[in-house]
Image 1 (spheres, rainbow, N blue to C red):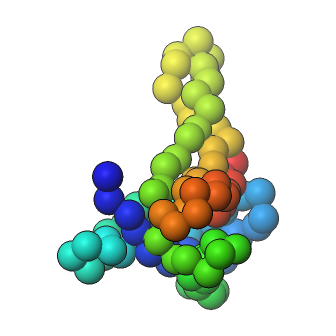
Image 2 (cartoon, one colour; image 1 turned 135 degrees about the vertical axis):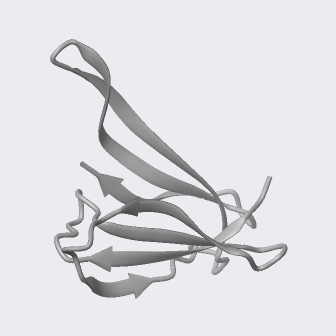
Image 3 (cartoon, rainbow, N blue to C red; image 1 turned 120 degrees about the vertical axis):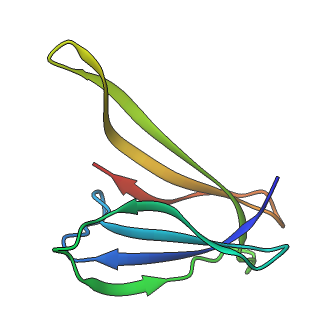
Length: 101
């Protein structure tokens, strides 16, 4: 398993329950930076970024994403309402980073 230090880049239109932007993950072993989630477009502008830390002060997380799949007009495959979560590598606390809609 690989742990990441997370950077959340909020773009225009991003709200608490409807994230718009990019989530970057930097590997804690090799330093490689990757785009973990991108929910944005060329018409959006970067507003701010945040670097989440656990309550214990640690910034390394095992990261996952979960989305609810729905049928749209009888065709499965439409994703709606998701969450990006992380588990702290030091103390094991879970936390939600962003919610998508």
